[in-house]
Image (cartoon, rainbow, N blue to C red):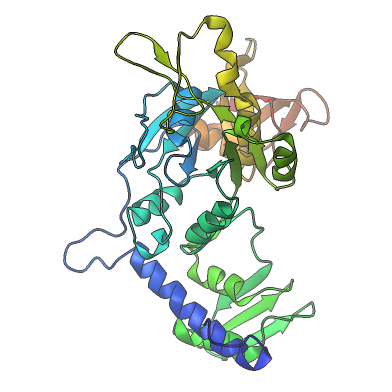
Length: 387
C-alpha cells in the first residue's frame, strides 16, 4: 500500500488491500475458536454502573494518578514505566450516575500488531462507552496521533460520525451501486473488489455522502463504530502559557493536573512535578496546599458527562414526591418511556398502561403519554399499570 500511488486507476486495488488488512486485524483481535481457545482476549473486568470510560495512553503519563484522584481507588504509581500490569477498575458517582473508570496498562507503538499487551488493552477499550486518552504535556504532541493510529487499526473510530450509507445483502442481482451525491473515493470497481474479498456477490449499496473505502469496510465488518474520545493533557504546570494556548486549539481537549503522593521512610510526603519523574522534593503537605494538586478535574468530569450523552429520569410513586436521589440513567439514543420501563424491570412493559410525564419533554404538566414518547434529561415519570 505504501508503494502504490493513489489515483483513480489504483483505487480498486487499494480498496482490496484495505479489506484484506481489515480481515487480518479482525482475526488478530478475535482469533478462531478452533482448538478450544476463546474468541478474543481481554482483561476479566465485570462491567458495572451506567457507563464505562477507559483510560488509554503511553506509560507514565498519569493514568493511575487520575484514577486515584477521581475514584478513590488505589492503583499503584511509581517512578518506573509499566507500573500498571492489569486493568484496575474504579467507580465515579457523578450527577446521580455511576460511571466505571478503567485504568488500562500503557500501550506502546505497534500495539495494534500485538506488541506488548496491546491486544488486551484495545479489546477492553472497545467495550467502553467513552475513551479518555491521557497525554503528557511535556512529551511531543505527535503521541496523540500514534495512539489514534493504534486504536483505528482495530476499528475504533474516534469522534467520527457513522458513514451515511446503506448496505443490504440480497440473494441475486449482482452489486448495485448508487450515489445521491458526487463521490470522489468510491466507484463500482472498488466496491466490487471490496465485496469480493468478503465473498459478497449480491448487494445494494446507496451512498448519501462522499464515503471512502474505509467507511464501506466498517459497514461490512459491522463490529466497527465511532466512539467519543477526550484528550486529557496532564502536567500542564510544566509548560508555558504560550504552549498551553497552542494545545487549547486541539479539538476534544481538556487540560488537567494530578500529582501523585506517597509516604517515605521518615513519615513525610513526596510531592513533585509527578510521582512518575525521578526527581521529587520532600515536604509535609498541609490541608491548605493540597488544592493545587488537582487542577480542572471537575472540568474533566463535566466533559465526560457531556460526551457520554446520558439522560437522568426521576421516578415518582403514586401519591408521593419524586425521588431526586436515585435517577434512572438512560442513553440519549434510547430514552423512550418503553426503554425507561425496561431499564427498571423487563416485565414492566407487560403491565404498562400509560405514563405521566413532568419536564421539558411534556407539552403540559403532567402529560399522559405512551411507551413511544421520548424523554428529556431530568424528566419526572410516573408509570400507571394495568389493573
